[in-house]
Length: 211
Image 1 (cartoon, one colour):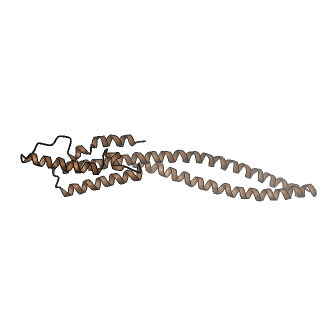
Image 2: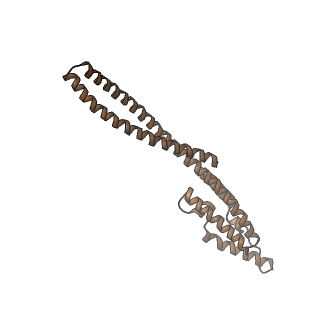
Image 3: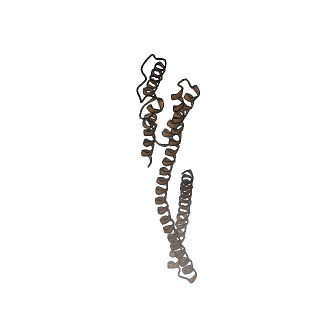
């Protein structure tokens, strides 16, 4: 997927460069055509006012050059119009491929979230697991914000927010710890972090983000 995105971006860059070159060529031809037209006007006047083989040859030659420049301009402008169409399509293809690549990266990050959440489920005091979880969630949010959307990242991906989620996680672990020493009833599922994050649905949400 990354290779395809790279290939599409290179094609887009080539088209953008071609557009710049065509625009420069059209500008040069336009200036040249204006100069030749000015010279042609003067030559035609001389040929009419002072008829001679030399004046007629000069005027005829300039007429041919002006006609040739007009043809070149027409071809360049036609090429530029087609490049503009190709650019629209190329930008759309790059955007689609970039979004697909971002979704693939999101999916991989969710695997990291799931792994860290599973470790937290096993031991809520596992500081390293909490740190890995925080990093994975931060990376997920950053990737979503920069490549997919602009607001509500965590909620969009996980269907909840940290403020709503974390108290439920700690309550579940407290209930589980109390039940383990006979001081309460086992907590009702779902309650573990990996379940509250609803990672299966998060992966499904990512698939729906695909263009």
